[in-house]
Image (cartoon, rainbow, N blue to C red):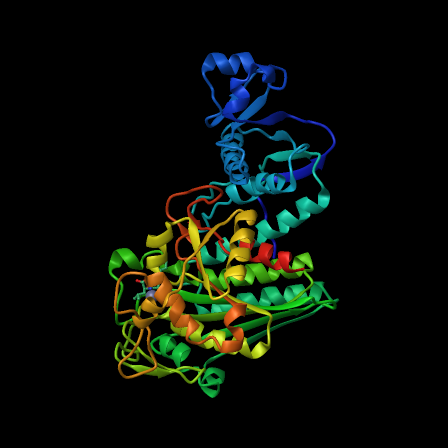
Length: 480
Ligand code: BES
Ligand code: ZN
Ligand code: ZN
């Protein structure tokens, strides 16, 4: 995969052009810092307290305010700095990384690489002059760290590109072939590992009796696909399966979404795309993990063949499902994909899905919901997410919520009888398809909130965020 960034990061020995200096409120309050901050007096006079970015013309220093000294502040501040650099048309900028720990160095690099992303693919007039990107001279930065962050961010931006691609182009065939082609490219490049990509479609799913997944695809003009990507390095210390919800469009089906809720549903493939991005990044980083990525790909359409509320479906795990709402389709696709995943004899299975609006209500638009039975594993994922620059928090299962998906005529309902706790009841539905021996090996990550950005925040411009890639790669890295 080729990805051109809007900045050129170079490891340099000396400063060139303008210079970036991070400042926070406490630094500007303390007169002792007047030596470290060349424009100390000027900044004081102007009342600049580290809020936003300030460019001192004479000294050619770009003062970049930090909200606080937390890791996230460095990424956010760098994204703001990039916008100034672009507006001021600064060609060369220097930044000294010495004295900063690796987490903060990573955050700064992410601020540039992710914060400068733009998707204007369908504008007839191109706004971005890609030949005119600023060069940031990085002083005191390790080449290996830069390489790692560039690999991860390139994949985040790649995922953003696919998720942003409109549904009339990114149909199920487009997404599954893209996944296959990108994997084959890496298989040719990294001959030391065994890398394969298999696409399964409707006839295979019928043989496998994946009645839940197939029902969602029933009214579609395109086939359903289960993409199975695998990476087996010579020395694998763990075996992990990542599973993603790949709804290339979610109309809601016969339980049709209202118009205002249907827009942005091109992003309902965010889970599968995140899984693809994390897979490609893991291969490129050479992680010593046997990794399988399963993408469940279809759209949820309406039409004379559409599955209905009241239908009863038989899933691959042989459990029967009463359809209460055809808009709760992601969990049906995942139920069968998780069943397939459990045949791979893995140490850990993690699914990523834009599963519920309720998760957005519970945690806000910025945070992923982490669910499962294994407290330690959930905590470990949350920690990895935070370290990687993503926000995540756990949501607790309980027996009362579980009762809300009981069916009178089948083993389980696909939607809860209550509006409350919807993210958790969706997680509990998935749990119905997790075999006992996998209970402590499974995590479910609901990314419905952060997957798509309607008002830019942090390092995320308008559109798809590529959420899940950084947290997943960080989590996988922490296993070896
Ligand atoms: N794809 C949606 C969830 C979603 C909502 C993602 C908002 C991103 C932003 C999912 O398929 C859905 O429609 N879920 C329903 C479930 C309900 C019918 C039980 C929901 O959240 O309302
Ligand atoms: Zn839906
Ligand atoms: Zn959906």
